[in-house]
Amino acid sequence: MKEKDPYLPSKALYQVKRLAQLQENKPISPTLLQVDPEAFCNDNCAFCSYREEKMYNNVMLPLIDAKVGDSNKLGPVGRPTERSGWPVELAETFPKMMIEAGIPAIEITGGGEPTLWRGFDSLLENCQTAGLDTAVVTNASNMPDHRAKLLARTRQEIVKNLNLETRM
Ligand code: SF4
Image 1 (cartoon, rainbow, N blue to C red):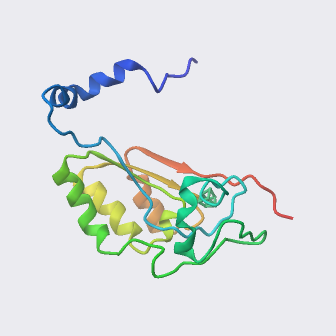
Image 2 (image 1 turned 90 degrees about the horizontal axis):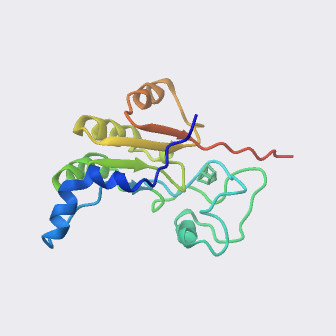
């Protein structure tokens, strides 16, 4: 079966209203927000772009008391800190702010493992209740039953980040 081209120009037809606003020089809101609510990850994938030297997104390392070059073959880099996760109140306020701003979709992701943030379940539930299209990127290592059930209600996509590295 031929794969769909994710960059088809006709995708713009889904955004007719936004295109019209642009033509009128009016500001438009994004169609998707990608958020990283927790900087700490309980895994340590060799390919992790959040830990690699010269990657723009390794600026989050100080949030987990780590620095570029830190390595730990047996476990995660850094540790959860006071600064590594969003303030927990955002689990409630963030979906409301998105609706008010006219942003229809959210991807809850990392680097960092989002399910380790203490507000994760509330954020996910509030996004679903608000009617946001919701995607989650997780390594699926922190998945008690109640969270798996909550994720099963996610309308869009759940991506399990597979760490295929073999630890010796
Ligand atoms: S699970 Fe994701 S955030 Fe964690 S180390 Fe692997 S690639 Fe990085």
